Amino acid sequence: MEEKKEDNLDLRQRKTRRQLTQALVELMEERPFQELSVTDICRRAMVHRTTFYAHFNDKQELLHYLLTQLERECIAVCVPTDADSPRQFFLTAARNALAFFKERKALYRACLESGTDTETRLLEDAAAGELCLRLSQPPFRDALPGVDPRIAARFYVGAMLSLLRWWLASPDPVPEEVLLSHLDRFIPHS
Amino acid sequence: MEEKKEDNLDLRQRKTRRQLTQALVELMEERPFQELSVTDICRRAMVHRTTFYAHFNDKQELLHYLLTQLERECIAVCVPTDADSPRQFFLTAARNALAFFKERKALYRACLESGTDTETRLLEDAAAGELCLRLSQPPFRDALPGVDPRIAARFYVGAMLSLLRWWLASPDPVPEEVLLSHLDRFIPHS
DNA sequence: CAAGATAAAATACAAATGTCGATTAGACGG
DNA sequence: CCGTCTAATCGACATTTGTATTTTATCTTG
Image 1: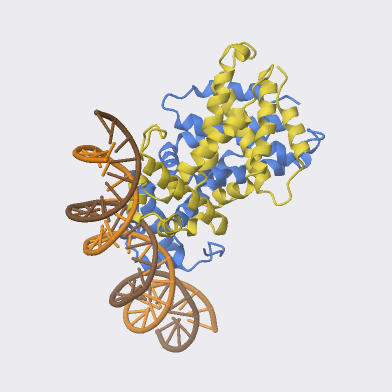
Image 2: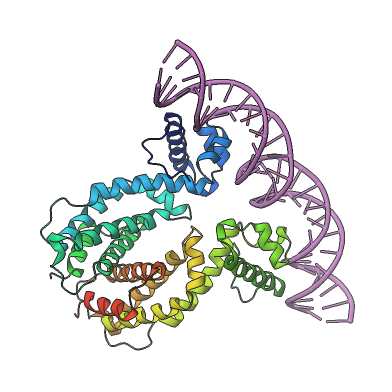
């Protein structure tokens, strides 16, 4: 709703946003997002309901806001700082992502079960953007001649995230190393 | 909600379900799903609101119902009947899927913009299941030694669908042949 | 076709949603 | 520190949601 820089917001606004997101996180650990009402969230956050509507149009928008922050954290954590090939870059990112989500399984599950899986969509766009950027810049620029970096980025990010979703949702998941070794195998060396 | 065989439902039930789904399709072409109320849908469908709740718990459940039907159609249309290798199988399926969604862009967009992109999630599960099944049965069973078919299926289906989403959402999409030639390149020959 | 089953409609209700305008409290700059 | 600006609160309101109960209409089966 608000499109401001987020940092130069009024102190009061940042405070209520923190209270609301915090309340949402707490409540999502108790019961599925679907069953939460705006009234519930406001009660928990000790924020007046009209104030909620001054910030977000509905509860999904609050969730979206929360997940955008999470996504930023994910990108920051997972993108490798050093890699000598696109292949290496991607494999390291995949390994990092696996670790990142393994520790956030609870929140992740809660979001998936909420029906609106905005998380992976947000993440997909952000990650594909990041990878695409790398593929079209100096270090890796000429490593893949004739390949559209946007297509390559979407392809591999989509593959990885789909695998990740499946792995996180599986009641009896394949061992992590098996997953990684398959990834290693599916990605060409050139 | 109802888990019956769908065919042997009471005539009256099938009728109201058709009316409701039809009304939803119509309304989604007028404005985003989010802005539709159960009351709206019932008014358009000429079905009493309490009857709606006898069939579905909320409007997302109706959407889910609609998309499940669409997904069945998609699988039926896209899965190749003949293919002599996993590689060939997948490439043909991808080509078919591209054509299928190109003709349903409007509905697809409407669903994506609705916030709940249950469509692609449903489709991902169904398609991955289908591919996995093929990869673990006679014709292709031994084509990929040492590969877990579930992992391979998720990987390639995820890649394809992510690309598809990007392609459909792009205001100025890459030519279809370019997309397909990249796919051809990204999938190993073995 | 008639009897019994059951889905749809009608009515009513408590709770939640989304939006007002008016008032109070707090943040920020000079 | 004080004046101004603006966010948060309050109270109220029309609408929507989800459910329960009763009545009416329609399908199915023998």
